[in-house]
Length: 409
Image 1 (cartoon, rainbow, N blue to C red):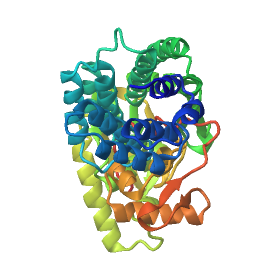
Image 2 (cartoon, rainbow, N blue to C red; image 1 turned 180 degrees about the vertical axis):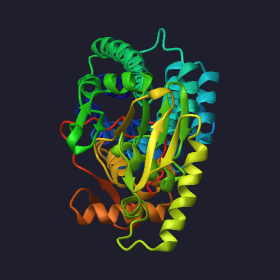
Image 3 (cartoon, rainbow, N blue to C red; image 1 turned 180 degrees about the horizontal axis):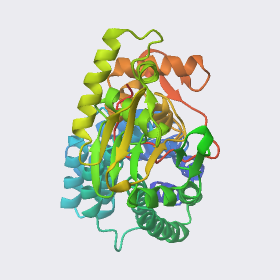
């Protein structure tokens, strides 16, 4: 490796892409193309970075498997930054094995970190946790240790474990300080700030105090209490260690949410029909359907609460005289999950959003069209290259809106 390539690689490791480009901008040999691709990625020019990395991988010969594997890892990280989550993870896994076989443990760890971060974005928390648990960052560069701890902190936040999240962020801060990369330090600072921002809302009746913003620590304490929590962030019911998921039963969850918001009072039958069935002219068929759906919810929620009929409607009565709490995300409505993903500042494709939310691409496109009409998201590019962005929401943490993949509708 010549001196210019070595100096460029050191500049990139220190977070200085312009300094790297000054040395190799006019070169088109495979090592220079690979470093130029990484530099363009650090500058945010992800499509150009991908082109350069692919050209570099093609330029390396059959005997240069190590260099090609490094290009695969770099391209996978660019795809992650572009929120292109539709590709197969097999190529990245094969590259990690090739790097380990050639004793390039730092880049092998980078490959496994990319795979774990992809799982986090897709909401597959158990798999992401298992992947992170297998990583050993001892003796590796401080920048990689910082990224690993940031991933561990994100996993803890999405799992509603603020204590481990703070500990991981403290380790990430120490590693970022050792690395001396400004962009990495800024990312750690942003994650720290998210811990002190509202993560959810506690919703009450207007005559009972209305809404109260909760930080992540308060959300975790509430879920660990004896209260019956109707959780509109994860779409389910929780009481202590018992959890009833209703993410795939939107009608039943809508009924549970309406009953929780009115607790300890009841809800009128016509009001339930209007809110859950989205109609302003309830008739006998709607009332019959309401009785059927209430019966289904009553059967599912029996270990946690009972639902009694009253003269005007229905009332929720939790077991063991528990308090009922309705927990809602900071952004309400069907588009809340979409906005939570878009507010990370990255540009997402509709296919990547559909994967992350567990919804169909057509459903995501309809929701994006509604948000665009309301001025809450914006599109860049055309046709297959179109990507979606949203401005950051000041004062709210969005990392907690999607602790698991949820459908939009």
